[in-house]
Length: 345
Image 1 (cartoon, rainbow, N blue to C red):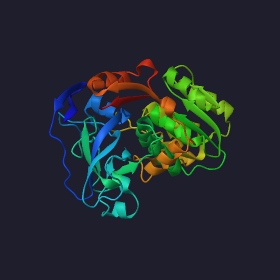
Image 2: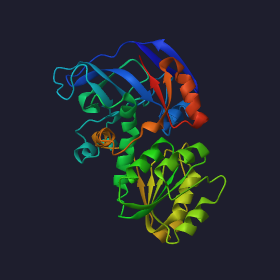
Image 3: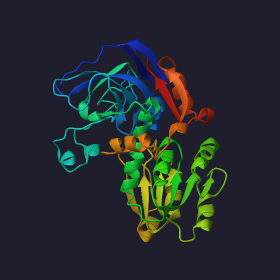
């Protein structure tokens, strides 16, 4: 089959590789139709790693994927051949203490699509995954929407983890694809004022469609001062979706005593520092988000019912042969890109 391999920092090569095969009775062979470029993919593209997860080149990345069932194992009942599916990229063991307690996202034996030393990614013609990673979608759902169900599932999980109070005043720091997905979920919740920040003006402009109370660029204005002027009692919850350490500091300054900081974004560095005395005096709760758990079907349902509309986020489309162009666009935040999608025919 044809695959796009990351062969070095910012280097892709298209090659013929062996087709994957069904090994287990619950395996599904999927013909990949579309893959989204995620921020974590960009970390691998630019740096070759995320923390201790270091790529040994060459490697296939990509995990926001959708496709069509090509073949199934003998015991597969969840999907059938020819069915269109959205994909949950998490493969868990179902046997460890984490899985047994409902935390499949922190499975002791977790394997994730497109992650070094775990599973090859989806930037290729075919992949094999267990049937519990495959979610049927209706004919009215587009492949673009199926791809976007993956970041939306993370947003659903992030908001659920935040224990959002009724009428909470909140901020989203970083309104790229994940931040905008969080915004979409907050818009169907009972919230108060929503403030958004980003260093990219096109993303602030894009966020305006969901009518934030205020939006600002931290490179051009003091966002802490501006938001605190509007919210003298400060905010209940801040979702940090950029991975920027400066934004984490801003989040702490924006939160009221007893407030909740939700860390959704992935920093590029391995260690960060916190203003520990402000955290302590305010008794701020910090919640880390590790992808999502059991939220894929919820995301699909929201998109299919049109309670959440993310169609505008699919801003750029590329064929597989132009994967490098897609990654350069996203890595450099060009042309107002929100989500670049790669089609595989």
